[in-house]
Image (cartoon, rainbow, N blue to C red):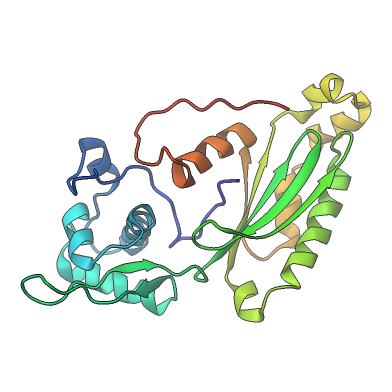
Length: 249
């Protein structure tokens, strides 16, 4: 899975609360909000990150973890709910005061595209806001070339978007590309003519895709993307330090 780039309200931040409900020092550094004006996007990213990590959270929990005021958290949560990014759960009774209402991510709140450009194949996936794969297209080849990769992306993207409703298509937040950097150095390993692999030297594939698409396009090294995806969606998300071994097939 590629670490898809999220929009202003869908950012993924590192860190998290400890299992006993408290905060580690590292987590608090990443999840501290600010009550200063003009920091709405920053605070919204923190809130979405926390809700993603915990599955669901009440406003009081978010205020405690982030240090934001209850009023600020209420304003943020209402805005995110109005934008269709959060869903309100059933009130949890049994506590003193008002019932606690957990909020969770809306799977249909946003969609993201991820393109893997590999040495033997290319793969395009569409995920929902929870990171679940909704659609997938793949193409195998002997070795990658910029032109073939571009044709695959545009054809696969057209095919996937045709399956979406207008409302779903409008919620595509971006395309993240994961690929080996300096692909031209892999000519011998890929068994490809050097003059064809050298085409990657002068091609800005991110800029080319961006010129064809209205939503933002991001590019990242494939090993970095794999490590980031493990941090966000894998089993190590509660860890601050881990080692990721990226094998080249």
